Image (cartoon, rainbow, N blue to C red; front, top):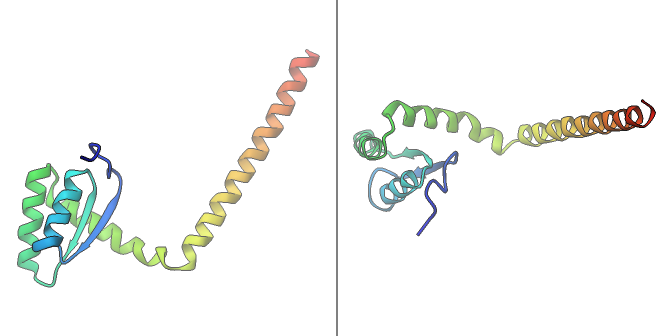
Length: 115
């Protein structure tokens, strides 16, 4: 139904991912190539589900822990002004690069005409 690895390079947080619908969604997202962060109030439930997902999809439990750590570190930035500043900085860099490319093209065209 879905393209293989359609969610590759995506990270999805599933709350209540230890059982029921959360577990089913986490399993399907993993099947589609996503990095999964699953949370639950019960650590023993989450460990069991994480072990099942890792064994079925060829990833290691520490990868799940690393993805969770990365997600927890980056989530606050997604809801703060830091993300907008980062985007603005990126746009400034892109604009400067286009300016330099344009200048080099003009110089290159000039040299082609005159030499």
